[in-house]
Image (cartoon, rainbow, N blue to C red; front, side, top):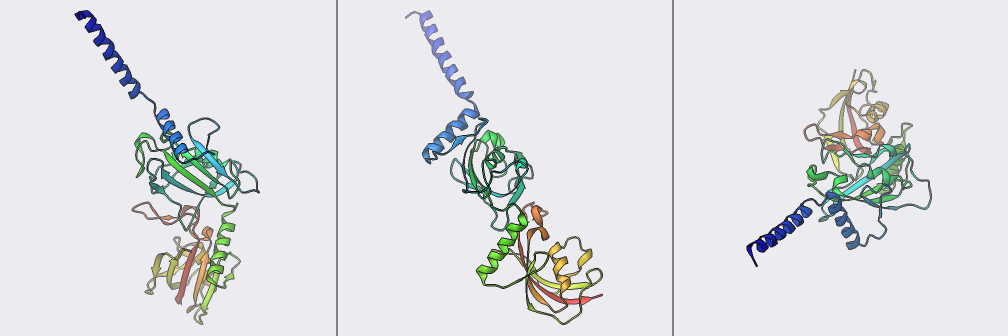
Length: 312
């Protein structure tokens, strides 16, 4: 083989290597993610998964109750989202046991959670999946990284992470109906008998005081309290007789306190179950330093209250 033949052969081999290397380097993230999702579907026998209608790259499966009508964009939906890694099963987000999310279906083209970031991310797959559901139905979405948090990742979700999402909707169209059933179910489970106020607050008086009545506009009230969620976990407490307030003029107080506490005189001890719209509502309450929720969105609150003293 002469030197020209050898040089030609070497050039051909080099070109082949370079071409193969370039082909590998320029394999798109779309094709990489799609191959990974298809392998995940096969491995986990997810035979009901279908590509999304617009062929953008995610796959989903819906499970519906037998009755009801499908969600439409103008409808309110109460729901929760679970997020885990398709790569190793790491659980990134779990629903709060004491609250739930809620929005109009048409606004579910975005996703945010302060545990990840203060940013809002565009993820229309959630809305597409919910539009295939009836209230009480669930959807599973296999979301490629480029339709999720991309090459940069976010928070504790790493870069190029394909995600397995579960979107669970609730049968209730209104949050106050959901809250009312939560409270009634809790009372039944615990064997408690409560009175329902016209405001929808449930309460149990363990000791009716005989002291001064409260004028919500002018009375300074000293209150001992412990606040819990329905799962029994406490989020705040002050039982040292040091919490003093004028109920009507303190903006930070929740409406449930302002409504019910003035109905009882000093010395009263009661327990009250406050629906979320009379507490912290769909916004919840976050820690100012971390941005994380202290009170989840749409949380029902359970308070032990003692009206220690009332002065005008």
